[in-house]
Length: 152
Image 1 (cartoon, rainbow, N blue to C red):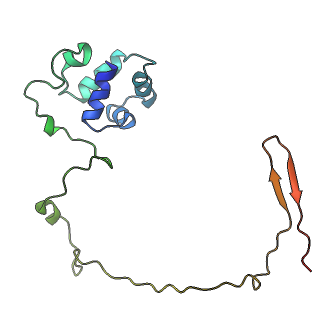
Image 2: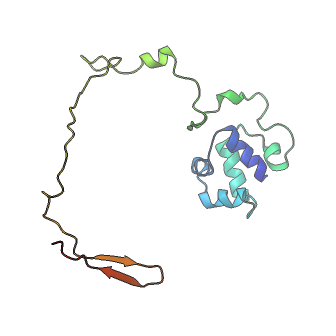
């Protein structure tokens, strides 16, 4: 059953955390199931089947039959997007539903130009702060202190 749960998550682009959150299952429970530490409890199976009513019960429990119930269109599942599976770009109709504020052309970004000056900072001018001591701590709980000698 562990591999079938993994297959559901893969088909819907769900990470273990998102899968657990979606079904309101403790994330650690899903992690333990996927790592083989625990078998899925009746509560976990029930939450999967009630949260994803299109999953075939026989397939989830016994591994027989198809993953999805007969007549279910796999493309109708709302899949989570991630960086690697972004899906097709928005259509022109979807782009036109954007609310456009009056007087602002959203297709033409405003140009905010900021002039950046390169400045050379003279280290001699900034004499406010001087190093008083340097302490180095070692992982064996010892330390060394260095005090700089005054420059003449």
